Length: 158
Image 1 (cartoon, one colour):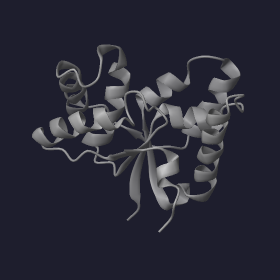
Image 2 (cartoon, rainbow, N blue to C red):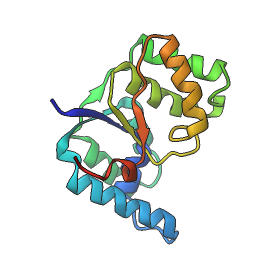
Image 3 (cartoon, rainbow, N blue to C red):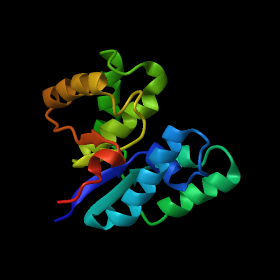
Image 4 (cartoon, rainbow, N blue to C red):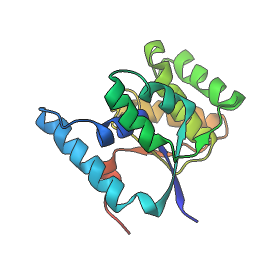
């Protein structure tokens, strides 16, 4: 059985975005595209309604590119557990209130037992300090947190 990956919005944005002038960002975009073309078939890929909502924002042409990629991906259901878990992250001050959307991505991936959450959001998702606190809450609530990583970290094959 294929391992399951939740694709967070920043991954989709880096995959479909125009090349940046920022050298670090353009390198991340290239890694994202390389991962997409070399590794995606090895995994079962999933998104949530929040990825769709975020992808619809901004420039219409860029949004259309993002939505085109998302159309073929299964959408994970937002259920009571995936709404309760982010409240615990916020209440414990692990994730700031302004980043509620980021906590929803983590919760949906966790509740639906994803193996990985693939993201470029290193502020509130792929952040080692935050992940430590999230892990404690997930374990206390009876969940196994997915491995949260960037495409770089998931590039090397078997």
